[in-house]
Length: 124
Picture 1: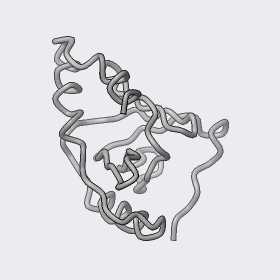
Picture 2: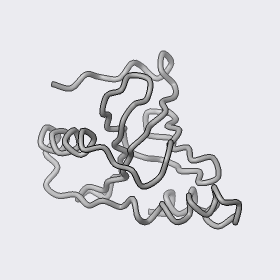
Picture 3: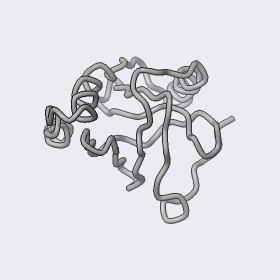
Picture 4: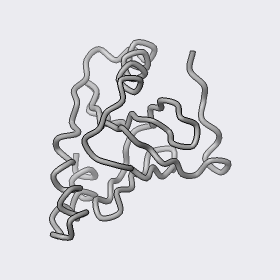
């Protein structure tokens, strides 16, 4: 059902649209959304850092996700997340996108709020 992503050196960055940030019962946070180059739903590895000023996320694998748009979520991405959770024995999860959207919107509008999100993710 799931296709593995190319190795990081082969595909070091991905543009992700219609995305969400999800947290599992283990406290791990993941991105889920639509890979713009393939048009397919995707779940990232665990989020390591997030830079609101550039809307880029770096994951445990070292891959960099450039987030496109805010507030739009693809049904295909939600379905992929549910299936991924089932396949990875995730007992429960919650959508934490709302924790990051205000800082990203502010950063995009130039207010400067939210540049400390990298530290907030690291301190978790």
